[in-house]
Length: 353
Image (tube, rainbow, N blue to C red; front, side, top):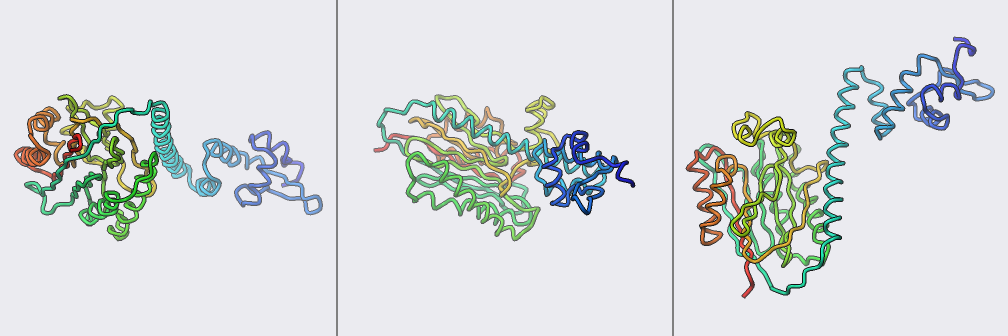
């Protein structure tokens, strides 16, 4: 092709909406080579046929896609490239949602008026895990201590070791010195350790892992970490509130208005997770004020998929102690067929004596 039939770098830049500086960089990175480089002047020339690739590069850069991934996408067939772009954007949306949640938390946290009451509070608690009536083994782990409450629901061939490893990695928080005002960072760092422990326990298996829902007591507040489909509930003044949101396909369909909560209970994909404990998926983190008389429930989905919230509220309201509540809830799940492992942690916030 003669030089007269090619586009100069300036003309090519205007046509594809990439700056000459960007084009020189992409040449150096072997992402978008010019068709010809003048051996004497070093001037770059491009073929008209290169505009399509250049425009694709420009669009992907506007999406914020890293150059290394753009190189991979450009090497694919159109259908495969579309799949890669879709996967990239889904991850961007997930990360944006996590940052939005953190921003909302920080706004609330910085806007709060410091509490002035000096009432000393503490937790009274009980935890228990049951295999259920059908499953051959128990892959749940439940734990309750003076400061840490946790439930994990393992899945896959190494589900039991995974859930156990996640909770075990957090147990040091029961006795660790917690820096004032920094409890969420401490909890987030502990969860990173739990993620590594789960990876080791699963021994690299892609089809094994765990969910995790935990509360860390600070003396007047509870720091929450949550990922997956275990749940945390709060019973306050006789009303039951769900503190967490399920990270499941079914919950996403409910949020989109494509499924009702009633339809979700019998949906064939009701146990399909969108998130579980992993290095690439940030958990939900929250900080909650506690009040004397609060009763918290952490449970695996073996309870909430077969026992309606109204029944859970009744049992939590009438049980005289955390121990009684835990066993009444597990009995209710088993009486409803016990199709899954069921784990419950119940903790009461009471005035210290």
